[in-house]
Image 1: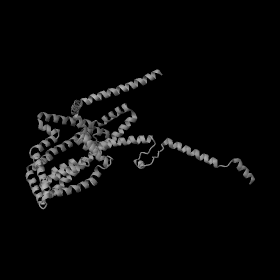
Image 2: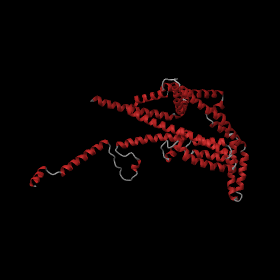
Image 3: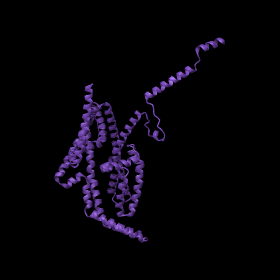
Image 4: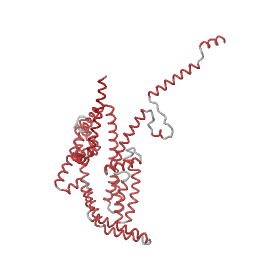
Length: 449
């Protein structure tokens, strides 16, 4: 008995000590937060090739699976492998290399075709800014010629905007912004040979990591499940695996659908702008496609600067582009996007907007891109937690059941159903006994008859 009391005291003391130690550690971490973030940043930069490899492997995995499945069928058909499993094992390395070659081909195409054309478009904007802005200013004056009071208010603001834009574009600020926004590869090329070598080595390591992950993903997943069951037990491991499976499905559908949707929209914009003879077709198509990845705000973020660029060349062309992009956004939002992405997250419009603003504020551009699927996973976890606790309290799990101002009826579980049935049978049997006449009385009546 005394041993049991000592064990309780020891457990309580150990818990208190751990809580106190954790609080002290957290206090000192907050005091040296800048130093901690530097250490974390250095650690993350050291693991950057592995994170990049995991991301590339996740994005390439559907194409890798497609290649592996079809190549293994050819191996079996031509008797290069005895069965499907052996063929898939032999084809994994070949499929992963082919998948990465496709990724490299896309990257090289972007550098060879898209970037030079986009650079020429930007250079044309810079060179023709003076003439285009002067022409646009003269047209605005002509439009406001009959309204001198409005012209006195509008034109000073227009001149101020033009001067600031001219200083930003032709003063070098725009090129500095492009250099800062071009990413680590372009900044590495700009910085020097040593950084270029480091970037190449990092990229090479990322591709090697991708090949290893694609070839050994089954083993890695099995090892992860093994450790999860060893640490948490079956019930907790099953719940965690179910949530990871849901997160994988949501992220996979969302990312692949968003990329495909943006690619299709960019190609359609490029073709229509060429048919309508609108200026800067490739540059505008790239802007629209890249910003369309961002849900809700993306179409407006891409359309507004594109309209301004085209407006500098021709107001009629800007009007044509505005009408075209409005029609395209309706078609994309109501036909293309539902077919490709669908309601992959299961969130309402309110929660989509909330997740974009919340995660965008915390994680910046990455939060805008991945905030919706991240919040969808959190929403699913919280919803499952609420459903489990409602079931324990014998309350309904459907949201529609709580759309009332009155009390909520409890729902019986299996045990309560059995008890209710037993009670009903007892009451029924008692009622039958009460209505049934006595045997002796029945005999006497029969005798009298």
